[in-house]
Image 1 (cartoon, rainbow, N blue to C red):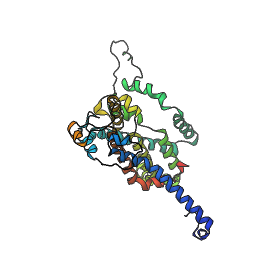
Image 2: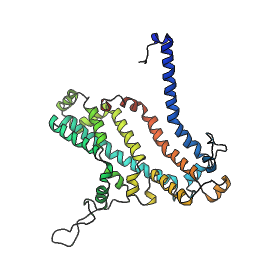
Image 3: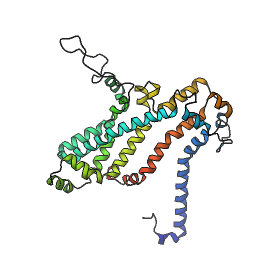
Image 4: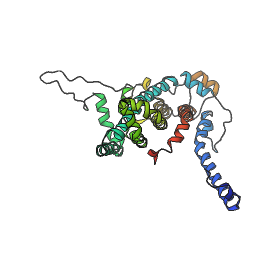
Length: 328
């Protein structure tokens, strides 16, 4: 449905309004895409051109070898090739999605269709209430419980009447240190429940009369009818884990376990420590494998590519998801 009917567009005031709205929207698009272009353009420049004033919007002599050095691992910015960090990010993303999305959907289905309204409201407020607790508050307790799971302390108690401590597991410096704390997300439960509430109870009751179990109803009825919300939650989870920084930085100290977000941070630390202000010539780069801020920009570009690809793949469901009642 158009913003203004075609009949009214013949008036000059309406045309002037449409032109103004169009210019305003295109201005917003340019402002939104400018940082993307600036990062990509800077990845092809030398550091002296990056810091040049006035700035250049197009590289004078584009150099694509920056990406080659990062992929091959010939750069001194990172201790390992780029594909190692991408692999780590993919493992974390897949692990969190496989646990968080189904668990959040099951919890939301339980709150929406299985509990009585009173208990459903109480449990729902409990999950929503966790969203008001700052994530920084849980950093130390989460770290301690992962260090000596299931005991949230550095002092492990002994088994009664013995000198042997209780069995415990140290999840630090493993992928599980990032995956396990992300098993359930209250915001995703909120989105799922908002959508499941719109599904008529008559459909579910008819399936129960036919002898279907609750898991069967969730798999055969709810899931096919809820593809848009699953796509929205899956994409939000993917982007959140792919770009997560603080928690992986705390629990993953081994360089071979860093996701790409931590790799970019460590590369920036390397540049700050060495005080790089200019880039060598392309021939010298090939010899010593040395990059500067253009390497940081290239890493940022490659980190954003999967997010853009994911949006292009799920854009249809994401556009439908914007209209969901759970977003109102």
